Amino acid sequence: MAVNVLFSARPALWPVYEPLLSTYLGELGIDFDLRTEFPPEEVDYVVYAPNGGLSDFTPYTRLKAVLSLWAGVESIAGNMTLTVPLARMVDHGLTQGMTEWVVGHVLRYHLGMDAHIHGLKGEWRQDVPPLASERSVAILGLGALGQASALALSALGFQVTGWSRSPRHVSGITCLHGSEGLTQVLTAAEILVLLLPSTPATENTLRAETLALLPRGARIINPGRGPLIDDAALLAALDSGQVGHATLDVFRTEPLPSDDPYWTHPNVTVTPHIASETRPVTAAQVICENIRRGEQGEPFLHLVDREQGY
Image (cartoon, rainbow, N blue to C red; front, side):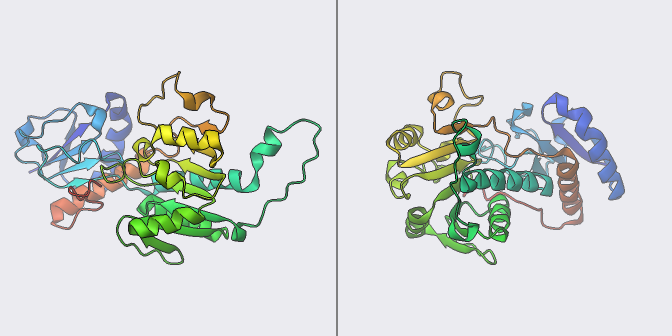
């Protein structure tokens, strides 16, 4: 019997993913039927994106797993109609893209590039930056993206400290956890990168109290999730100079409204949620490998802990 795979994402993605998924499933020797519509009771796997329109999984009585095309699963992790395994997207293309974006913006701050790019013309500035080994960078969130970014920055010589809510071990990286660990990380972070998932426990991780722990003038980079930051508290910290600059790629409301104060604040750089994107070629490989695993009775990759929310 063929494995029935439902593709539930934006219609514009179907012509991109259909040939890739078909090719990889065929190479894995899987007898499959891949469509954008099935009778729900005949579906074995759902290739899923939250904007695909599917929200009620109750009729999908044969369903074995939901395989997300997105790294973030906050919009589905709490769905009470979903009782089968849920896998989030972790693929090397997305990871590489995020690592490049994070390293680029850390180097921008570290080297003081803005002073030369936007400085006064005719001003001979000889501000020599410290070496990377003299610069403290902290990463909040040590999942696949946080670990990859931490290792890349460490390879450049930066003093990198990572923090997560629960204990983690990353070879060569100082890893802290819990509330005491967060305090320790923030008090030393000249450059702070946020790569935490969005859950009730991580909302407003950066708020007035925690922003006050940073060294004065610290830089913040957020390619993680918008709700990690209390926006009013960050704006106040920017106005007071407690935070020197913030580069923000994600927001509570997207696209960011045209009248949002982040657009015009002199010490904020807005990027339009481009830090990293799911790459269809590599994402399709991950999806197909999980289908193979499901059919062979092997553990799925990148399963979401529904209680933790990621």
